Image 1 (spheres, helix red, strand yellow):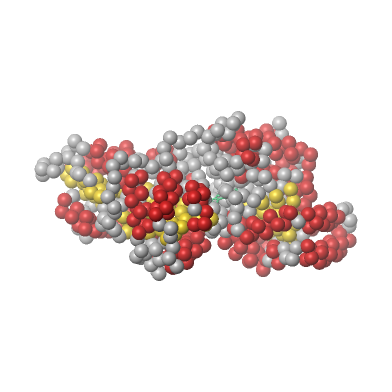
Image 2: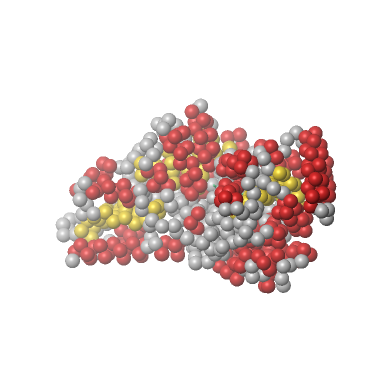
Length: 631
Ligand SMILES: Cc1ncc(C[n+]2csc(CCOP(=O)(O)OP(=O)(O)O)c2C)c(N)n1
């Protein structure tokens, strides 16, 4: 066993070149062993294991800072940079993160989770180091999916201009989560099939690696480069990365470690300025089921190590329900179109894609573009539903404000994974959408509490023409209420029957207001308080904007305390809005939600316990409030 002796990157460097493939097999085995229990990003990490080893063989990550894009493919890197023993705790509360995190390891060059940031970060590091007189290469390792994100292009543009010491390694497996999309992907694939181009490249690079004295070699390289450029200009009209100011190397086999090592050494020792190495990999490498269906095994919960079987959830997820309902609406309204930013499966839109391929758009990892693109479609008469995870929509706030809300364009934003998402952790919790949508004029914001209500919200949004609508809903199973819900009125809440005897004037009266999943908690708590010396009114807010101010006004005559519950940051969200409304009536408001700090990764139940956002904790707190006020 080689892996048991690897305590850090220096141990990888000390291995012989012929031992590295064996190490890669052991690392892959370890990834499968652990993720089968913890869940995680299996196929991306298996695919990038050989790259991680080749990079660590040549570069020192404390000198050549390494930034993985997204970080979901960096498990091998984690294992080899001193985290093998902790790897069993992957994504568990208190354990190691599923992404790179500068607080977790000195070997993580930059914290990641959201896509397409690596080239910008590595470039910043390269510029800082060069200003300090260090001209070592700084490294970004980015997938072809992440390369579709606008920030990647912004960074390439800047890097080509600055000509600093940056190495971009493109891990090209032709896949994002599903098949990668876009003209750039077609271009990359075109490079793969150009055989004459590849063999010419190979010969040049092999010749340049001879043991010639360095002066002769650089003269040779210069000449070879000139020949290469002129020949390549005939074979392939442009190499886009060269035109952007990078030296392009590739495409090379991302599972041939000796070859990658040779090329990385060449880059390290001989190439000045920005270098782009194009590496071809197989997603899911070394695990038959993950290779076969790398989309299914991209990111998943626990599975059988032997067969790959995944434990199926018994309930329908919000995402699946969304996809099905949108198909139903689309069957009656041909103007409905659906947009995803590379999350067709995750958002439940695969079914829409199958049924209505001409009305479905995967824009790549391009949330900002998805929003403004939808604006154009809507202005010309279509009804776009843009389905994006809450956390990724943070990227497109300006587009929502400037391009959509300002012009009152009737686009529908479906914000999946709102609230805590669990094992993906701080980078992925949908903790802020109610806050950042709250201050956008002209925007309707809703959150459903059950399947029937969600369907009504989608139907409402499909008809609404006066401006944009956002619907936020959580990760996981959707509950059915079991009774139909009448069509929604803009800005109207649902006030449930009060619990407790209204006629007992001595009783304390509490309104329990919740939005989305927060209402489900509020309702349960109100039932628990039933029978105690308190009367409660559970209220399902439904709308954050416009808020049901008529209901709130009426409430001021009926209750002496207001409780709010939401799965969103307490700053600027639902509770703070109710609180500012009630302040002029001098009614105390106690708000429960996500505190003003980043919530780590771990099982959602555990996370909620730690931030006191579950039934028992809130109940205990309300009982204390009641006792305090009665004392
Ligand atoms: C801004 C943003 N949008 C969406 C995602 C979800 N996401 C995680 S990995 C991934 C696909 C990345 O594809 P690629 O870069 O090619 O890496 P691969 O998984 O193929 O190795 C997506 C869409 C994200 N992390 N960040």
